[in-house]
Length: 232
Image (cartoon, rainbow, N blue to C red; front, top):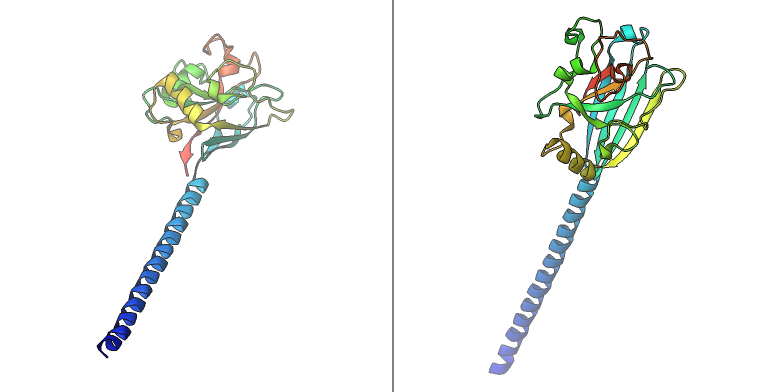
C-alpha cells in the first residue's frame, strides 16, 4: 500500500519536471528567434543606412561668362561602401569641357564660396588663386575617375550647345578615402568641409592679370560657379 501511495506522487513529479523542461526549451527557442530577428533588423538597418550631402550652385564671374548665370545642384550620396556623385549644371560656356572639383583647406577647416571682395588685384575677376583664400585648394576632381586624384585630365564633363551638363559617377568610398589620405593627410573624409567649384570661360574672355595654376590657361581654371556642401 505504501508503494502504491508513492507511485502517484512519483508520476506527478515526473510530469512536473517534463513540463518544466519543455517550457525551458520553448523559452530558449523563443529567445533564439527573437535574437535572430533582432540581428536581421540590425543588418537591414545597416544595409539601408545612408548619408546625403547637397549643394546649390551659385554664379561667379558673370562678367567674363557673357553675363550667364551659372546654376545647378550637387548631390553626394553615401550608400554602403559607395559614393554616388551627381552634378547638374547650366549657364556655362557651351561645347566646352569644364573642370569641376571639391575644394578644401589643407588643415581641414571650413570653406566658403568667394565673393567679389576676393578680387584682390581689382581686375574685375576672381581667379582661381584668389578663390583659394575662402574656398581652399583643389582636392577631389569630378571627372571620369575621381579616385585617381589627378587634376589635369581630359575626362571632365563637356557642355551641350545650351551650356548644360549632367555628371554622374559612382566610386568606391574606401578607395577614395585612402587616396585622399595619402595625398592630403586627413584622417576622416568629411564632405561638409568642402566647397564645390566649376570652372571655365571662352578663350580671350579674361584680362592678362588673371592668374592660374599648373600651367593651365586661366580661362580654363577661372571659377564660374560655386556651392557649399552641406549634410542633410
